[in-house]
Length: 416
Image (tube, rainbow, N blue to C red):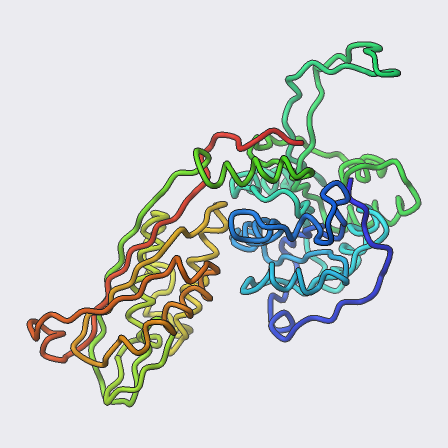
């Protein structure tokens, strides 16, 4: 178990969070991450420890934020961990975090209370230490909420269960009908808020389904996911990391290509960097040909269409838009699948401007947008020896490749 903080101190939102999601009705996900992870030791709570190059908590936040049926995501944290949280949540479109309480149950109640003004229709409650929550698992829970006030992910118990007394077996427990509960656990918001308020003094309720049961709410069981492990020990974190790094993943590669013609102007934007030039690039958005090719490469690796299907040029909201938004969308789609971006490679094809002086800045910007190390980003340039439209100086082309790793359906490790 994780010992949670005792403070109810308010947490001030950052500017980005203040301008983030605004939810009325719909579905909000609460990610419980206020505990201390006593079994891990050290000074950094386990939810902020590194897992495959990102804080453990970020995996859960990104997966929930990237799900199309989730309208808002809020974390419940210890305010003393705010710097850790800000690093874990950087670049994700999240509701401002709120402070947790003295126990997990208190933290969930405080998180629910913080949503009172939004009045969501339903809420998903998820433990931040479960990094591998899959989109189809979220789908199953939300579908079950269509005809029940509560639904949880769970797996039928298959191991023989023994009752212990004084270090010896005192009996065998009948396992028929027994299930291992997971998160997310979904509920009607009004019902679970009332149930938590009524159970505020109870000390024997180990999950939110137990709180709902105490209030007499019917809670459905839906098929859980063996890969949806809870990281509770250093050994479990190591197994999760090995699974992500090796046989637990499939590697995919996508390709992208884009072209934009020149128009009058004094700069071009390439890979998120403004480069001085005697002309600009024409396009519906900011015409960042490098980012457009890269986004198409990432979408191709996901088999998720192309940039035009996600951001149609016919839609006026994308006129003049910063292509960083498109890159963030592609990044979050990878995270929502439980995956990660392994490396990207962009080649700019033009006679001018000169790309060399700006390559390092471009690579750094791409790394920032994608949430990966700069050593995983390559930006190159070439010419066509004055052949073709780029050789005639009519425009700029870019091609890109992206390699991503997605979880396989096999389970990474048993819960521990």
